[in-house]
Image 1 (tube, helix red, strand yellow):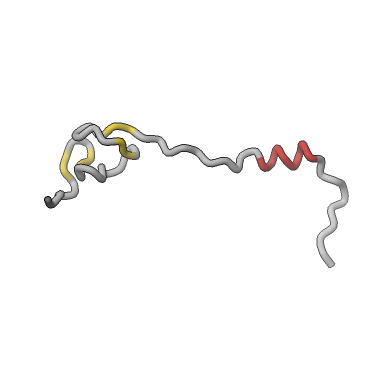
Image 2 (cartoon, rainbow, N blue to C red):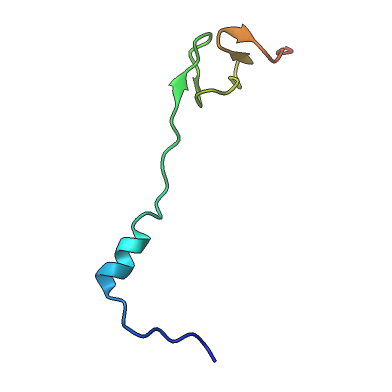
Length: 60
């Protein structure tokens, strides 16, 4: 036997529950060293620096 709800769920109640299933744009900040857009609190992919210090060495 499958589960049978006792009462009908209204469209408004159902859609209120589904209202939070949305995508959010990633928050981007400028790198303090090179000015490239990057995600905050992460190493910059362009120059390899974090908090104005070089963390990952970039080879040419």
